[in-house]
Image (cartoon, rainbow, N blue to C red; front, side, top):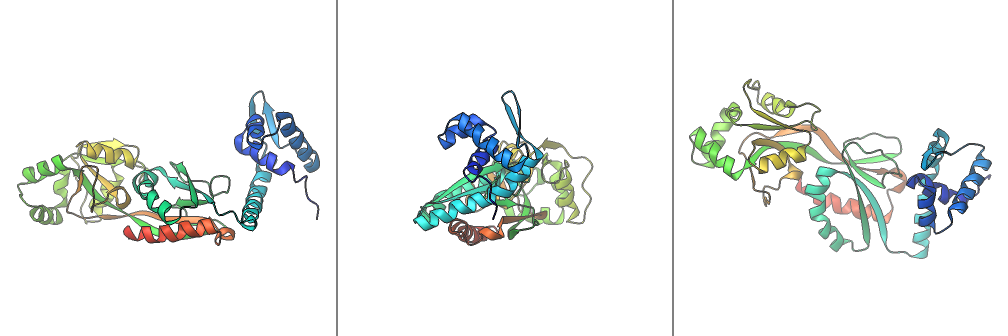
Length: 311
């Protein structure tokens, strides 16, 4: 078995991950010249340049990036196997998660996770778009992606959208529509959902990569065309749309994990009308080779129980 200089591999991984020889030297508690020596030794062994250095900037070459992708998983597996043999009980796990899901659903429930698994040290890597499924990004992922070789994808939630507004706007809607009770409002909006178009509607771009598409689909699924004369307030992200609804700017379409109808804490109320099953299905993704790792098994068992609230 022909192996590279093994002592140089963790140095290369740290320098590549941190994009800096000096930061790698601090993390590994060695001198910067020692880092340079390890990288040169590895480059000489491979016969390839791993980094491009331009002043203070450090970038991986294509060969360096490919090599990093290949060895990172192996280094992580060696580290985890060593910890298990040594009887280390602390379990560390990095979870890449969408910003809105993290803020509105996951973080409020983390105390419960800590009580159930006090030795699990969870680090959140917040993403605003689809995360790259790689050990360099995180150990596991909450994603709408559901296909990559070598990965498991556990479906836990299909997104559902429904209209919400502030309590003040809710009372205004009932008044302007000439109803007094919630049941009367429900009956009216069930038969005439287009009545909502009399009020400002809040739309977000991030859901369907297009403004007003969320509301168009909401009306379409009730077999009616979206009315032409609608006042729209446009926001790039669903989080901003929800905040706008909180401040009485209009009616927004939000999803289950952003709104807890049993214990609303943001001053919003759900309108008694149709809810739309959105396009996205959410999955917990992780490498098949890591399925039996204790930390991942703890997170999976906890999420399986908690996600039941959304279904």
